[in-house]
Image (cartoon, rainbow, N blue to C red; front, side, top):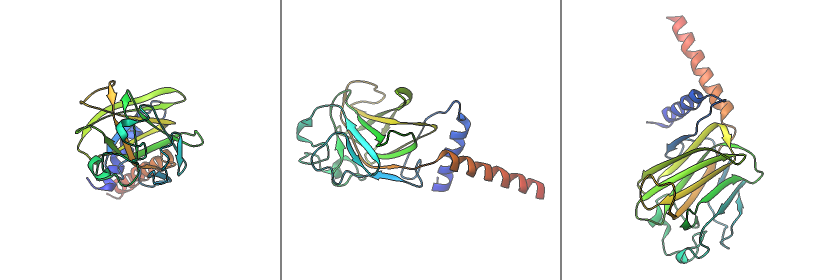
Length: 214
């Protein structure tokens, strides 16, 4: 499926949910959820292994072990080379490990966002991820996925969310346990709901004109 078809499929899925009953849509691959990034981060300057790390208008935090078996939260002094995590990982990255440990993604000003993409990694041999979205402290979505190393996870919701949490477990379909999550190359695009609605409205209008011309 090319990029245009992925965008149309995502837009149709989002519109099917409607603003009042918005549903978080999970996609995979760069450009599947964010095609016009406004905010981005790659953790290149996070050399002090800091929590509550801000970059490119985004705020990142973690729960879990501060030692992380010698693997720094920014990939400093880590026993895993970034290439072992995923082809999408390079240089510094954010990682954590511990019981139900997760990495949180928010905007620095606390505002809502409507889509996000990031390279999803794990300290395990197999990537079994789990994500949650929140808005004003209320969970709005969650989901499991199992993918080869190098997966780019995309999440989108026309209703918006103000936090995404990412976990990585040892086996598939887990919602709790020991988690070893890692992320890199985070991208957020704004505003998407209006552009998606405009795009779909335009397509519907074109379809109507074609039917009339026939």
